Amino acid sequence: MTKQEIKTTTIKISEKTRERIEHLKEHKEESADSLINKALNILNICVRSPALAGRILRDIEKAKKRKELLEHPETIIKKKPSQPSVQQNIQGNINKMRSNLVAK
Image (cartoon, rainbow, N blue to C red; front, side):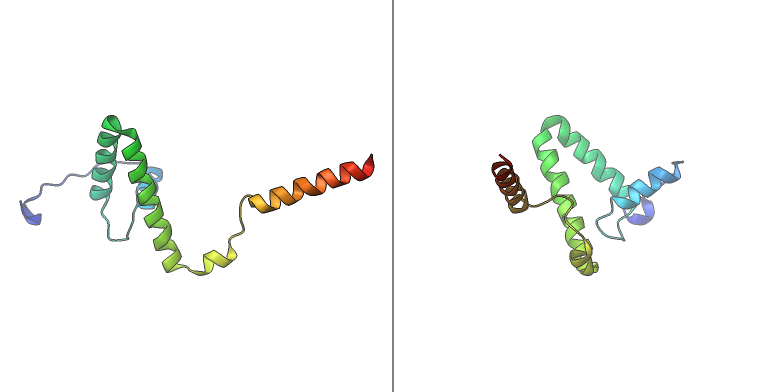
């Protein structure tokens, strides 16, 4: 079938659902139809191989993050780490142990 021969229909979805669909786009030209098909394909894969479906979803998320960084490189500088680094945790624990030794 050519693009002109493909039959289409209109469905009613909530505004929140539409926003969720928009958020899933890997690129702005991606259609809602292709996103829904992608989600259905991943669900089918999940039934046969949950690990593979998880890998696919992680790859999609990585691609979205790369795209965001390419479009907005300033976000790398502005974002603060949500959790302290391992080195900071270790240093904090060492400081606590030292203060406990001094207090005794």
